[in-house]
Image 1 (cartoon, rainbow over the protein chains, first blue to last red):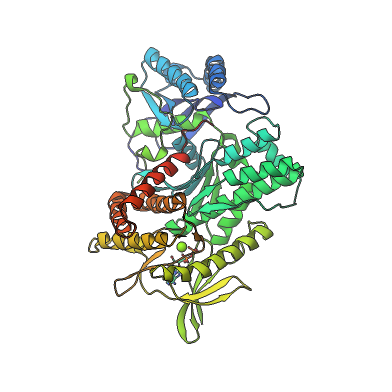
Image 2 (tube, chains in turn yellow, blue; image 1 turned 45 degrees about the vertical axis):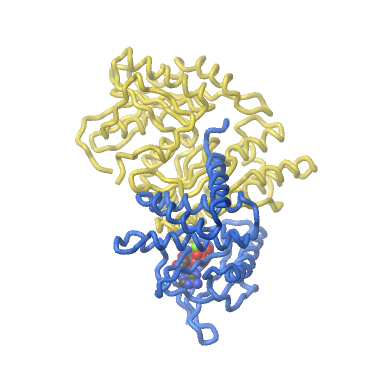
Length: 340
Length: 211
Ligand SMILES: Nc1ncnc2c1ncn2[C@@H]1O[C@H](COP(=O)(O)OP(=O)(O)O)[C@@H](O)[C@H]1O
Ligand SMILES: [Mg+2]
């Protein structure tokens, strides 16, 4: 990271791409060290057996936004005067959800005369993980409801080394969970079931070059479920198969790029078994494994605030009239001004 | 005499002597993170696919290594050693005509596809620039037979993705040259059809869908 001279900066970050409405205060000191001062959130919970409904999530976010915002300021013992810049999640995400965060950020920026920044949510997962783990130039495995990608920084941007060809790992877990009647997101429940089994059932393992594919596995797992196979065994087998696939693509990226550092981030990064498998893969290659702390693996305001700070520090400015949201804003469209 | 020359993603690569010849031994060792039954299944499947398709590629008129020997007991393959750099390692050399290289890459892929062989792992580390100027293609572990447009499109999408992630500054130019080479083998109609399926494939995995 290069180091422009500056005073200590504080950013208010607003996250609202999917289930979570989050608000966080993050600071960047004169030495470019980041600190999360506060991080508040409220998560929309769809009824068991159904997925996220954009309009209901929008309603949830609208209902909780001011409460979450106030809590984050109170916990930080700060008021809006001490905020230097406001960042919101500009995408990718669900349109109605994104708009709530953008409206909150825009109103605050206009009223308090603060600069505004649109942060890319996926870049947030990556950069916050780098900040918290002190990773420098890692192969990133980004695993969440919205993403399953293997990324490497090159020539000014984070680039896709590999990416799911169909559904994400989060969708695999949630859709299987829903078929079994669990509430979404169901990653934690599936992990708990899996930990009770050691009976491995062979599931389709699909990898095309550097791109994993999970839809065939989902179909087979659902079929096992309706044929009356033991739930714990199926969960165990889904995890073992899907995570092996992720380890393999990550190892392929390490071999190809000749990097020696892996960084795991995104909501599914909280899974202990996935961490364990990646640890073993990295050990066998002599690479370093890092993972974002569980508390910040899921969607949160801090990831938005941190990207807001880095962008602001490197001269990014956004006219408030252009503070739009983009539902499918790809992370490889973002210039990463703070890395070389 | 065995010298480890590379730790690939899934295999260790040794330079060995085989029947008096200088050869490559590619051995797929167990992965400690994987369930033993899945591990054995993958190593076996890929070793056999590789041994089968490395030879089938020759029938398609593509320069793949000669298969010397297959040892199923430890999932290893002995094959011809291609002497030369991987194209991944020479792309930054300004004196090198990358156009010629990528046209040749495109012709190789076109020739495989014409015979319904999907390579499955088309990265720039799997093409070797052999000293006399000709191009060798290796690593058939993820290869399979298919006549589906979709599979051919995914194959091309993978090359494009590798170029964009690892060689982004020159990726567009390289891919255009590659398609020129591909077209010279597959013809306009089939090339255009595959390119349009490729665009669909690229849209599919992306965030735009609802969560
Ligand atoms: N026949 C060969 N001749 C020369 N080099 C080879 C040969 N086979 C493999 N290599 C070298 O080893 C590397 C890894 O081999 P590869 O077959 O691609 O294994 P992996 O499936 O692990 O990628 C290649 O990138 C190349 O540098
Ligand atoms: Mg290879």
